[in-house]
Amino acid sequence: MRVPEIDTLAIVGLGLIGSSIARGARQYGLAKSIVAIDRDPAVLERVRALGLADSVTDAVAEGVANADLVILCTPVGAVGAVAEAMGGALKTGAIVSDVGSVKGSVVAAVSPHLPEGVAFVPAHPVAGTEYSGPDAGFSTLFSGRWCILTPPEGTSPEAVARVQAFWEGLGAIVESMTPEHHDLVLAITSHVPHLIAYNIVGTAADLEEVTQSEVIKFSAGGFRDFTRIAASDPTMWRDVFLTNKDAVLEMLGRFNEDLAALARAIRWGDGDALHELFTRTRTIRRGIVALGQETAEPDFGRGRPSGTPVSKPD
Amino acid sequence: MRVPEIDTLAIVGLGLIGSSIARGARQYGLAKSIVAIDRDPAVLERVRALGLADSVTDAVAEGVANADLVILCTPVGAVGAVAEAMGGALKTGAIVSDVGSVKGSVVAAVSPHLPEGVAFVPAHPVAGTEYSGPDAGFSTLFSGRWCILTPPEGTSPEAVARVQAFWEGLGAIVESMTPEHHDLVLAITSHVPHLIAYNIVGTAADLEEVTQSEVIKFSAGGFRDFTRIAASDPTMWRDVFLTNKDAVLEMLGRFNEDLAALARAIRWGDGDALHELFTRTRTIRRGIVALGQETAEPDFGRGRPSGTPVSKPD
Image (cartoon, rainbow over all chains, first blue to last red):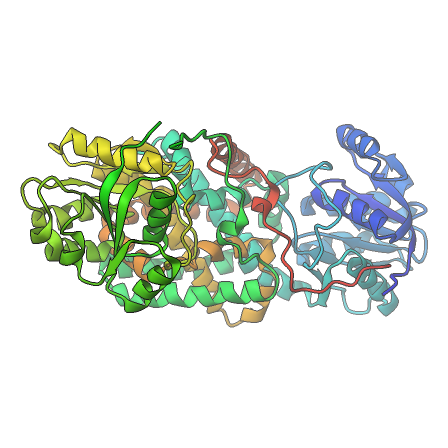
């Protein structure tokens, strides 16, 4: 499939996601020209050095003035201010999109600042790593991953099709739903998992009876898995929890009810209840592997860590 | 370092851990002869087909009769019955060890059944994958991983040194502590992480508003990481929670207190508290990576999953 090329693509925020879009758009020929916009001079310097864009600027209104597609890749707490700063500078026919992990609050924050004749097609590529910044991005980040669009009612179907084609050009699989449903789905598949990962890493760090050195040494028993997502970008995740509060607290409530029942089963020695749950949870992973969303390799196929010299019999 | 060879090594339970020990002992020349003991005929059949041992049997007393080192690799709930069945058959000077993830209850269950002249050196290699059974093992599973010994007071120092040398021969780093401290350390670095992983996968499977298909599709947002450890062996983990109840409930209590504070910070919009925690948790991961207990590769370095054909511009 030949994806229609965008004349000028503007990316606001060149972190992991923004810089991966820039790399992918160039590699797959999705845009004739790329403008990189970021308020951080250090980021712009890296973008220049890495050659990720045709032009770079910290002036958002100036940067988007000629853009056909503008993608907001800042933390979700910042999109409202960016939209306000750039709204008046957008040309008629431009399309604005974003990559935020929360959609209801983004629609509410961005829409009021966009002029007539500019379409807003909110998007969320469900992809990422625990690293941040323009050096962390790569062009295949979205390959085989879902990208969820949540166009408000009345959005131009042509604009939606354009954004869909762009994400398909980056290798993503596109699906649409309402912002409200998106926020509920992501609360359980992404936000609450991050919250409990951050939480257990914090709990482990604060113990008196077990030293931090012991937690680190014996982390291969399971704990280290949680530290990966608990190393994700702090600003991005602060904003996610503040802007998807209701869905996160609702899903966390469910999690807590189930955990209380599990603790009760342990206290009362109900081995059958434990065994039943532990058997059921295997099925879900098989589904994820079968759908190509996860590797079937043991231990994620992670390389044997180096750094611990091991003496072996000769 | 030349590890002193064991004449006859008996392994009871040829699952992931037992079969990895068999493979490693042979590959690194740690035992002249290996006896594989398992009550499951299907497991013994696989052990024969894979050539993991010199002899195989389902009769534990007969299997251990000539052994110099016996390693119990069954779920921890079964070690007492195995010890009882084999106790009278052990030869004087034999050493018994195990690989259980819980140590206090194992010492209590095994020790009474061992005769005079037989040393018990409990061990726990902190290593594993989410796969089970004799086909899942591999000889380098313990390479660079910690193995914790918890010898009861009065255990023969020669026996402890022998078991330590055996684990070092398998590539592990050996450390000793009391059973009680082990059970507390592992409760936070392994048992509670498994519990909350099992729990969130169960919560996600039971929602009405979000379908299982959506949970699977959008799992790359974080959820899929939890499904790996929630795919671990159900019987092994049931026994862990039932036999390390006190430490697990104590650590789970800490986890819950911290989670309640985090939920409160979300409800009241305390972004600074969230950001502070999310920044602090990054440090712990860096420590784990620096110690060689984890890969620094983004996303665990996991291979890009296949199975989702992606159309690309030509």
